[in-house]
Image (tube, rainbow, N blue to C red; front, side, top):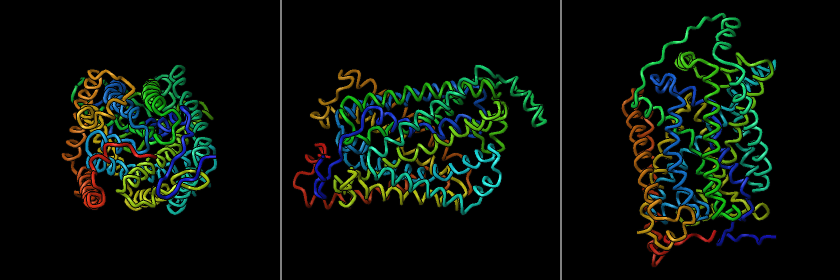
Length: 498
């Protein structure tokens, strides 16, 4: 029986095996990314035409580079905190905190967004199953908000009950997601666009003539890839399990690479099947007029019952985002509190379940604001865009950390157990700076040049405000720490005990 952690020296228990760590990353990645983004891309980048899969492949390059940087840094610093810990020890404490703070803020809000948008998926399942009255109830605003909050806090409770409770939920759900997503992939072998157009005319009375594709343009491809890059965000949650994973020096890098490559392949096959069945020009037309999903488009052509199954798969994929993202944001807060940047109470460990229950309760509270904000604002894309900006900055900093760690912290640099050759590390780091930096510039340019109703609908401005708040918080804490600690720089060169 592990010893209970004290408030002074909190300890997370290593009990997450390789599959649980992989499932954490997969669950954070697969959700809206696969069911919404590949079809709604036509609204964001109308000129992309039939080249969505090509853009997806291009987006995978910086994601893989970021994943390799994470894998190397995780092998040297297997502790909770992920990007915060890597940048604060291998680059600069300030940069580590403000970048991870914006990530935490964006991800916390998105947890609430995911809980809120899951309810319409459940409504559509009820419709498809013939439960019209239930579907109408799920459309009522009060019921939608209450169910979203209930879903959110249900997963807070599951996470508080510890890694075993978390794993018992996560592993079966990941298997179900891939099995049900596999139905979509296999459907591409039995149906094509001609089948879709026939059913569209028969059931909807719509005769649709596919358009000729636009000319290929590199600028359009890169712009679309910058949007689709968001689909790969989530693997970084694996790094947050650093204090709870078994054999972390081996399992964390391995899990990161398996998650990126496995989910990336799944994305490609899924998207290929969708566009093999549904003409790209029809998807583009529908995306301009309303919010659409891949299961919703395919339900028209798939046999009765199968449409219900793929809708169920989409709902499970969304729901399964929640426990993994809650783990991620709570461990970030735990790492800050361990470094005394956040209140010490957040480091408290549950005496029975050995989970950071105070951090999880705080994460649930912030995420609840995301639920309420989505309801009252009527638009949840702002929070998602803030998260994309935050994660691009994070990934860029990971690449820069990989380049600079040998100079800033040579002792930790020697602990890197993946791709030990320094030339390989520098190649991956500089390639990451080039690709991820380019994607960040494109993302910011698209935001700042688009027309919006008010300045606060520009995610870049909101992100800058969050960064300003984080900077002020860090400055106040750093001044206090300098008064209390004789050699603060040396302290931030070492890994925390937990």
